[in-house]
Length: 456
Image (cartoon, rainbow, N blue to C red):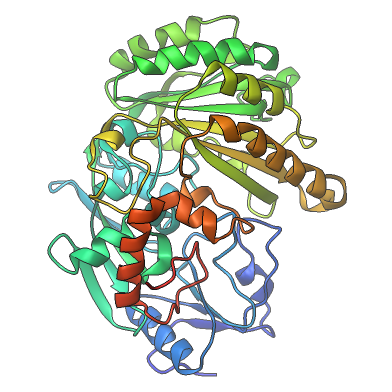
C-alpha cells in the first residue's frame, strides 16, 4: 500500500512492530487499526487525511497516546501517528516555543528549562502536549500563568479536507477559539506555538504526606490554606496510597495516605514562606517539599502511572470543599481494592479565573477544583480488580453528585462517558458555538474519535 505524498512509515497488521505501534497508555484499550501512518511532518499528515477520506476510512489521531478514553486508536481504520514529531524549538529572546504535535510535556520542559523558561503543562512528563492542550491544559503553573490554552499563540492545523492552515488571533480566529478547549474535533494540530515564562531551574516543589486517618482534618485545613494562597502556588491533593518511589522510606510504601503536592512559580525563598504552614500542619508521614529542579519535579510522578497499566476514570468539578464533600471524599477515597487507584483534586482559580469565559472554548473558569477518580490495576490483575475498581470509581462519583459544581474537565472523561457528559463539559452556549465551528471545518465529522462535538 502506498499513500500519495506520504513519506513516513506505514505499519500494518503483518508488520513486526504493529502491536507496539497500536498500544496506547491505557493498557485496557485493545483496538486493531488497518493502518498506522507514522508521520514525519504536516505534509504527511495532510496526505493521510486525504487518503483516509478518499477511501472512507475511520480516522484516529495519536499525539502522546495518553488519553484514558483510548481515542488515539481505532478498529479497522487509519491511525495518524504523530509520535515521531516531537521537536521543540525555543526562542528565548521572544519567550516562545514551537512544539510539534507528537511531543510530550517532558520534551517541552527539557528544552524550555535550558533557557530558564516554562509554560503550563501537565503533571506527568509522558503526557502528550496535543491532547492536554486541546482540552484546556491544567497544571501546576496555571494559577500564575493560566491554562495551556491561555498560553497558546498559534497552531498549525491539518483540516478535514487535508489542507494545512495557521490558526491564531489573526488567522482563522474562529478555529483558534475552538482549538483552545474543544479537543481534537476541528483538525489535527501538527505544531503549537506557546508563550513561555521565566521559571526555575530550581523551584520550591514536592509532596507532603499524612496518614489516611487525617484526611478530613487535612482537607479542612487545606480549604482555608488555598483560599489565601498566592497565584504562584499551584497545588494538587492526592488520596490513595504512598507510591513506592525511591525517595520514600520503604516502610511507607503502599500505606493509605493523603498528600498535598505543591509547586511555587516564583523565587525559592518566597516559596519556602508560602508553604511553611503546610509543612508544619499535623504530623506528616513524610515531607518531600523542598527546592527541586522544575523538570525533575514535573516528571516525578511518571513511574506511578506507567504505560500499559489499566485505567478507568470518573471526574467532576467541585465548587469548593464543603464539610459534606470532605466527608464523602474521606469515606470513599481509600475504599479501592487496588493499591494503585487514587483520587486527585486540582486547585484552580488565580489566572485561570481571570480570563473571560468567552475568550476560549474551555468552560470551567469559575470552578474551584477539578476532581478525578482514577481506578488503576495491572494487566494481569484484570480478573481480580477490573470490575471492583470501576465500581468503586462509579460509587465515588455518585456519592459526590450532591456536592459537585456544574461541568467536568473534558480531558478527564473516559470511554463510557456519553455525549451528555461532553455537553456538560462545555455548557449549552459554548457547545452550540463549538458545533458551529465544527460544521465549518469538519461538516462530515471525519474527526470523531474524540470527545465528540457533532456539527451543528
